[in-house]
Length: 116
Image (cartoon, rainbow, N blue to C red; front, side):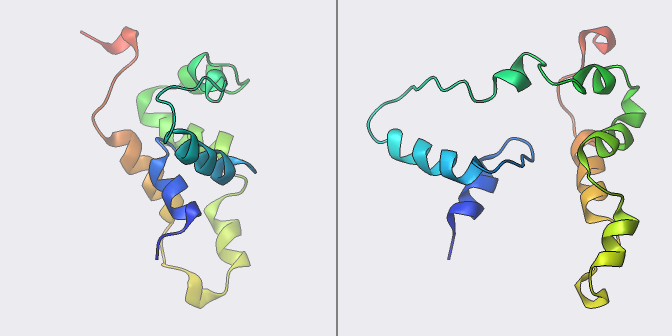
């Protein structure tokens, strides 16, 4: 059985944490039945680099991107998280860190300064 949370997460192009992400996804599904385009303002900060941490992330060499991303977005290191959970809930590896490293290692667009 798929939930609204499942479909909202699957629709994301990057991990997002917000109190309204599922509600906005459900609203978008409903509105899309009647109209093709809606301007909401969602995503403007991302598109126009409106967050204070974007310059720090943009100035890091590619090999340090996953580490810097974790410093900015993760609220605690994996070791702290592992101490909070009961041992039977742990997989034995840092799943969040692994996800970020694999995602950032995937081929994709590069900043202009590194394009040939």
